Image (cartoon, rainbow, N blue to C red; front, side, top):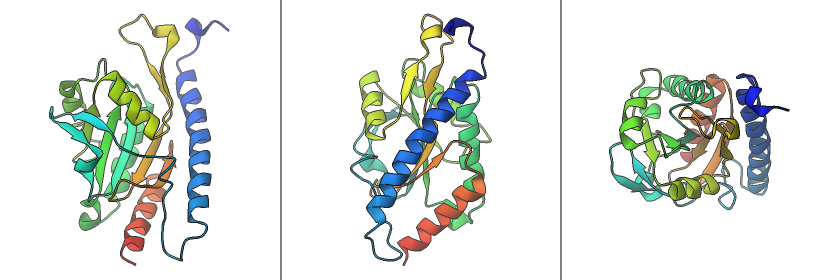
Length: 214
């Protein structure tokens, strides 16, 4: 196959297929971690998904996972030049949060971790996160290629620069498309595959808060 002539619609298809595979693995593992849990207790697959990271926020400050402890996190890995999958996922995240009441919504910290540190500078992310249809208080994170790679490994995120466009300024990043729910200590709770309906996400967030208070 001549990959230089592949149609534009093929990118989202490939990314969606990859994200579904990763989501199934993550969900099976997480379910296995909860098998022996007491009723109403949600245990996390800490060994598989999540962990330490050090990145640069869109404000220019260096942050680590510890800076977000105390608030559940909704984390999405993407990039600002993404033509459709990333904006759609962030809009779905925003819509899900809007289905919560104000008190519930304020507890969650939405994060976008860039997989394209070459172009996604803090300044570029600062403009991007202000997109009106994205979640309120969305924080964009970037860093060196090594820092980004370490964060992606911790969350088992697949990503690769498109070989067909490797020499072009407008290259794309093939990547898995998942929204991660992490608890207040940064432990994995649940993952939402690409195009999960916002109502389904909202129900899971409400259930998470209810189980926390159980």
